[in-house]
Length: 387
Image (cartoon, rainbow, N blue to C red; front, side):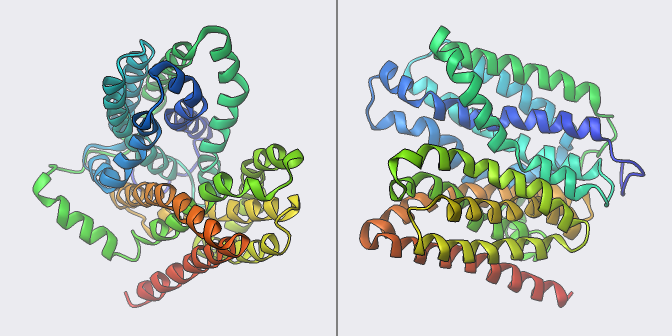
């Protein structure tokens, strides 16, 4: 299928979103069981890589994943990635020796990348222009929803049956999603994109990042990802202990709520890039409020809600700027790569700034990232105007 469809395939879109929950759980299952893994494997610095290896794979191969999906087609890439994810999670359920467990996380990183590139590409192609803001905003919630489900349902499963039970349940879910996606998607959603040449990778990277159409969402996303994860990780000690857990738990939900309500409403009326820039501007104002009132809940929730506008609109910007499905897959690969750069680097930077300057360090961090997001989108918009 090519071009814009006459109807949005909402059932298929929800199925793809459900597959995305499995991809988010590839991160989340280790995050929520991290203390148990430390006890099982005896702690030590090496166990820390159990979480970060998936992110490092994204940094190294995010654009490569986009190129592979563009070449071989999102449908077949997605089914293969889900199947691979099921096999890896089933292997991890056996609790292998730590070096083998860490090696499996590298393979899982490849599976994760293919899913988060292929699924939003398919969602864009299965949605009418009118509904893309809604469907891609729905897609953008997959991480927050998956972490909530793992906390509410996964941890009781671990408490009752052990870590292996959660990983085995995840394997079954991924296998079911591979079957579901294969049944839902027609074979001709997007055809293969030609031969894949490893020799051309460096040139393809340079071309994608030189294009203000393909690089725009990714350059803004690194600011979003770096800020959101770092704030959730580093800022809780500035809150009173009695409200700390509640506020931090509500922040992802505030982002999802604003993305699916105000964000969807705005995306039907203005260009996605403008919504992203609006979200960054509101985030900057919320950061100033948080700096002035670091012990109050409202500025944290306001900041999360403002970033929710960036969250959904960034995905919606990709098909608006790149009508061609292959270009969308490549842009989604760049977004995945830059997202991993942000999540990996943002937290240590904010730790260093707050350690040196306290709440003033947070203000510097917020001004740099939120102002940087506005600046980067402004520069890429100016570059697009020259075409």
